[in-house]
Image (tube, rainbow, N blue to C red; front, side):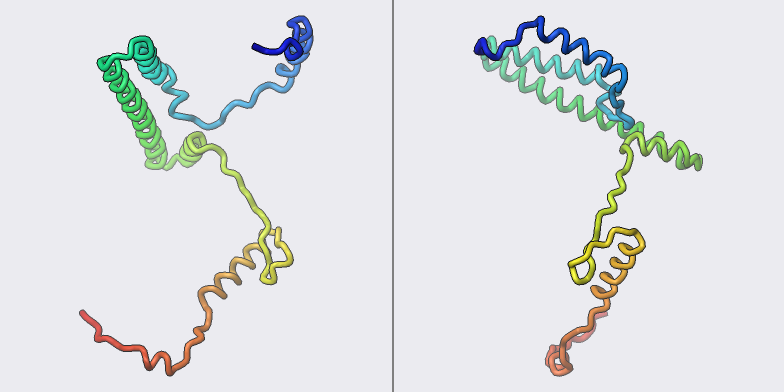
Length: 175
């Protein structure tokens, strides 16, 4: 039970709520631009979850071994059904996108791929210079820095002496 000091009278909330109405109309809501497998199969998923929920309610009211087995089976059926729905959706989407690729319809291919995976974010962050004190932010400088990094990494001179190489045992090459 809430303390009386925390309860707000309904009459004080109504004017605040009415002020939010025009805000919703003006700003609106952001709609999702990518597709999800569960959005298109909402009805099927709801039926599976409702069947599982019903068996859970029965189990809570009558905790018998039979009801426990029934609920366990309903949980497994729900999980299996949802996995099948998801796999079917992905297979359908993959076939659709593959057909666009086969037809060389790159516009639809790109749109369908973007719908599934959503928009990509380009996150060009700063990159530290060799000395580590300055941050490079321009794309040309970043590319140059990566180039020098990999040149130093892959073309590093070995610090071994010839004596050490001569002492390393050599084994015959097997063909």
